Amino acid sequence: MLPILSNITLLLQAIVSVIATIAWFGTLLGAHRLTFSAIWRLALTLLLIDVAQIWLIPPTYQVAVASTLTILSLMSVGLRGHADGRRLVVLLDAILSTLLAAWVVNVTAALEAWLALPAQTAFFCDLLASGLTLVLALIPYRYHFEWLTASFFQQHQQQLCCFLSISVVIRLLNDYLAYLMLTTAYQGSLVWEAASLVVVLIIILIPILRHQYDLLACKLQQRDRMLVATQQYTNQLEKQYLAYRTFRHDYKNILASLAYGIQNENMADVQYAYESVVKTSQRALPQVEALQLHFIADVNLRSALLVKYQEATRHAVNFTIDIQQMFDPKSFVVDVDFFRVFGILLDNAIESAMETPEKLVSVVFIGSEQLAIINSTKQPLDMTKAMLPNYSSKADHAGLGLYFVDQFLARRQDIELITITDKTQVRQELTFGVAS
Image (cartoon, rainbow, N blue to C red; front, side, top):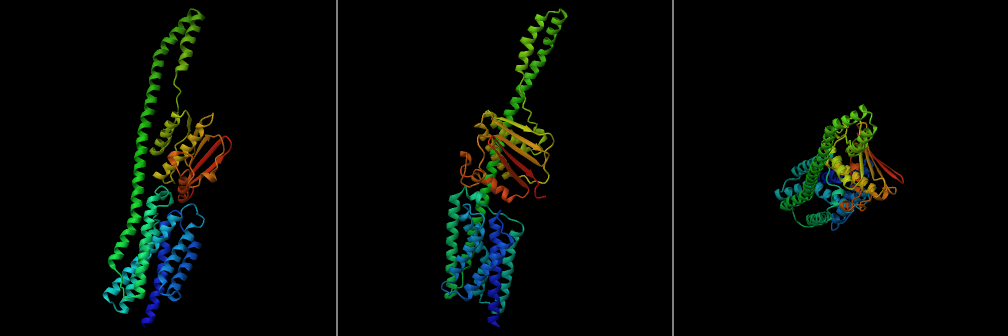
């Protein structure tokens, strides 16, 4: 009876370990979720590794070989089709996945040895541990919890290397303790398991908190720029209003002069009134920029456009907005990352237009679900090069370029970007609500 229970326990733990490892790995990958075929291939590979470590590999090398092969298998699947400098991030995801998947089972084994439970009781404890392992792994995966992807760690390489080093140390210590349990009377340590879980959770939570801090700081900076731009725009409107008031005050005198000249049939007075007053007044009238921002429902999008309008004006770029109806896409979720993407596209457009004689940037709203950013350019945009992670055309986006935009679009199915470029113009079309 005992050998049967032991074999069932080993097989059950192998299956549960495979499912939990894949679920945690898919969760930590975030935007680059595993495909159905990749999950099946990975499951078979990991199951073969677990079976081989139980019956084929000598106990001396069991744990080290199995954990190494598991991590390499996860990395192979995680990098397939995305070999773009994400190797360290995927390696970190793979190590954390194996640690999270094995934690409940390790704690259960340590408790069973410490309490000296009978075989039947230990079997039911193993069943409960397997069920809890699956629940803890599948809930985050089911509800699409997304950990930080390469776009964050691309900006925090030191943090990534530090976390990776810590996770490697924990993985090696876990392998060594598992080796002791196989070869000696070592029963496991609850203190070590608790400490390792705390460290793993810290590795996961600290980048999330740092990311939220960065987003908050970015939002505050955007708000400050919005307030400055709003004040500048208000000052321009006040100047235009004063100019209109001055012209309205003078127009009665102008009409009186013209009427007097006409009544006396004195064309010299009429010509003088026209040349000295009317013609010069037309030149003095302010050139009104009809931004028509009231047609944009989202106040943050309105503010972003206002900020970029002010920036383009400072660089003598002709920034126009063409909108004829209310723009309020209902099937699109707006977040901070979208405004960062929108700002990058506008920054690229302004920077490109500055180098051309036309100096033209135009934002055209098409209906309520599409907009286009059009700018003059000196040469066609190389999209293949621009999407690389280390490419950048500006100092304030060093090392990112359009890579962040590409990462954002990869995880958002409700927005699509189409870029059309030729020798003199770049047109970038954003369509919202694509997934619906």
